[in-house]
Length: 160
Image 1 (cartoon, rainbow, N blue to C red):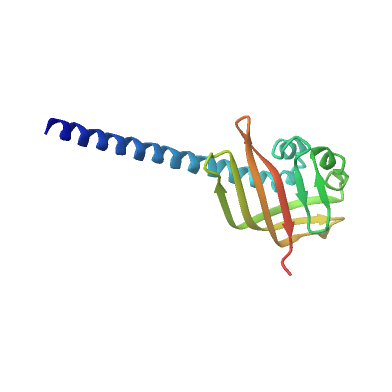
Image 2: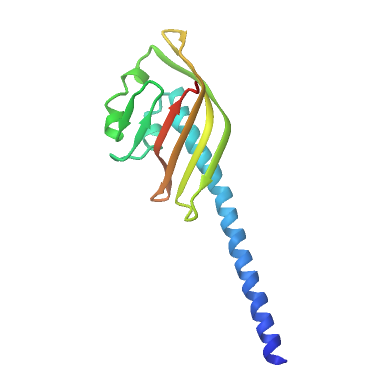
């Protein structure tokens, strides 16, 4: 009977340990969710103040970064993006704000990769005329690098 009771207690302690680990993992993902959500907002929201430092500290700082726009433009690598900032830096361009709808974020089992889907309304002007992206589908992938979430791939498209 003593062995049975000891075995039973061991199983109970093991189950408690597993459940506590799962709760910790879930809590970590909830905290990470908020950081990833803010990172997604930063990828578009940097334009309000033309905070290029925020933008370049949000995307992958290497040749693996990929950005696909609805204009059939694809940027491969951070240098490709850095060499094409004239439009956003122009005084003719003004960001007004953005709204993200139906945001869905998923995490890999390791917790080091996240991917998202949302619908973006990005409000801007060019020479004081509306230059909005409305109802744009936006998907992307983030990777946690050196403790910071970075967007490594993003794709914008308009539904037909």
